[in-house]
Length: 116
Image 1 (tube, rainbow, N blue to C red):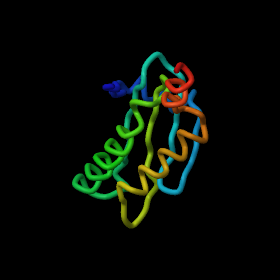
Image 2 (image 1 turned 30 degrees about the horizontal axis):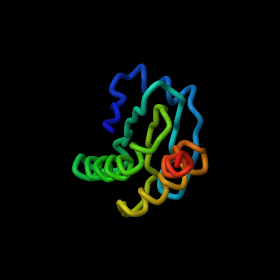
Image 3 (image 1 turned 30 degrees about the vertical axis):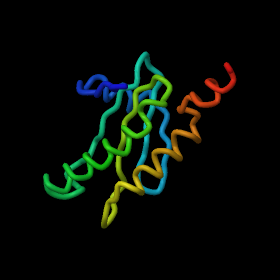
Image 4 (image 1 turned 60 degrees about the vertical axis):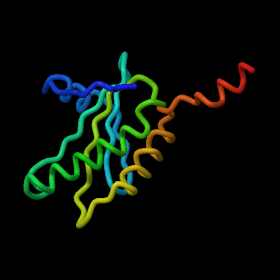
């Protein structure tokens, strides 16, 4: 499944103002129900130069794509917390934890077994 990216400022501001915020150790996730899975990553200049910011964005996108196929339709905004180092494993762990806690993952395996 290919999820859409939130690109317009109006869409991102809408998620920021109306969405629900949940926090984990390494990031904050803001979500709002929608028709499809859409997401954006926001990394400000306080996180370092462009090389550092782009690395953080790549790590967040890769971690999010691991869960995107199993998500319920919603718009998601990922905001990292300032830290000395950033790792894919910690982003993936926290995104999974937040999505499960907020019940944003569909249980496809369970429903497939139930139909047998």
